Length: 306
Length: 284
Image (cartoon, rainbow over all chains, first blue to last red; front, top):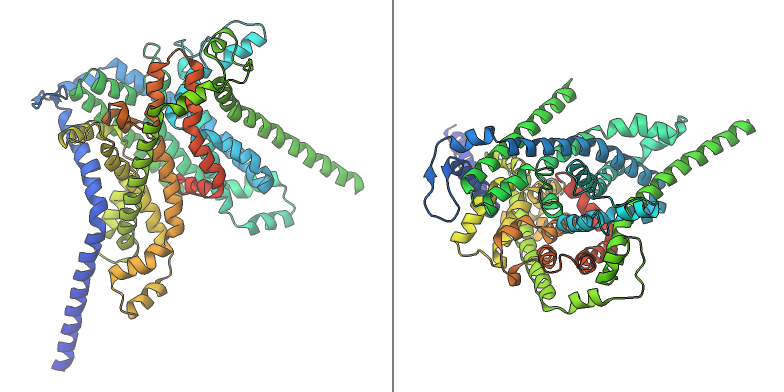
């Protein structure tokens, strides 16, 4: 009897020792990544929130605490809310334009298989360019003097067209370019979704006399619903943090017509060296994105559950 | 019966037609800007000013391309991009694989919270970290060196890489690990001898996905470096723009050359690249 208890004790001690060892080894393997994450995520986020309560030019060592001054300013800053509005416009139009076209292109590639490889390659090209390159390309391709739109207009006997120089059209030109760049991404995304649907589904549908269109509408679409949902989340979060492309193509102008939260934050911090207020903008942006993303995911989760 | 069949055929033809029209239409939209870029690069400065966008170059004029390729600064940018890419990728893939191993194969108390932290980090916008990272870089004396670009590149690619590799390693059969343990392999030995070699497909898709992103990265490079000799290829375009802002032809040639490595890579390993993008598509 006592021997049995002793054995059990020894076993549990052994198990504890093993657990301890596992913990040590796990820590060893996890430390490098988490070190990077602490230095480059946790510390910066805390630091940005702290800096947002100071006035600081980024150069001097001392930050002067000024309470909620920056936050108060941010809430009443028309430029920031204009920029947020532009982000929202980009978000909505991106969703409406990119998702259906991306889905259609993926449907085409899935239906045609290997025969459509040529199209796949060409359609994919915009995704290989850096946002900077895309920004410059369209800065010139849409310019008034030697741009493509002016070229077309002149061929038809019209005058010069300056979409980027006009306050009313600049944002929509930017959105069109964003769509050009990211539609291939959603195309690939949905194509990945299609390729994960078992071949048998289509075969079974064909045996039941379904056409391709019926297969897409009644079988593929419902199966791909989770993929579509996550594409929407990606698109929304992405739209709220665009930077490179707009910074390069229009610099936020003309006026503030294409200003975004990120470009406004960058200019405030690194051109005007107002890093205290810049931190408040960055922190505000972070809060808004987190809020919108979590509301969206909540809605989706609720729909999935019901 | 016969009529019905031919009607069905007609329907298919029409449906194919619709598909083809869409395909060609999107082909034009995707491709024409590229054509504009490459063609403008072959023009002389005066031509881009005098004639419209769709005017063909009057004669073959490769001087813009030659001028860029033979300029030493282009190769400095190129070299910097390659160094940042290679160093970040090697470190990134190794530490991500290390972290994915316990997250996918061990049982320990902190596993779920740590994994949640990884997933949460995937959606952090980099702009909130920009000012502190800038400050940190200045303080550590790394400002305006290419080494300043490597840690942020690793840090921002790590969450998605760990996430995908964890999923990948979960798929490796447990029996292989048990066999190794019976053979006297410790947990560390198992990682290097079994898990790491078997994760190669996952690692290579991640290399491609992260490679494209790191190669094209702009914001950190723009903020953390200053002088020409320490900047990467996306910044080359920025600097050329300052230098030749009125010379559209020159800038288009520079753009075309900066995309060229990616296009060559794409043609060589098209399927892998698409797969890599798909893996990344989980997060985007």
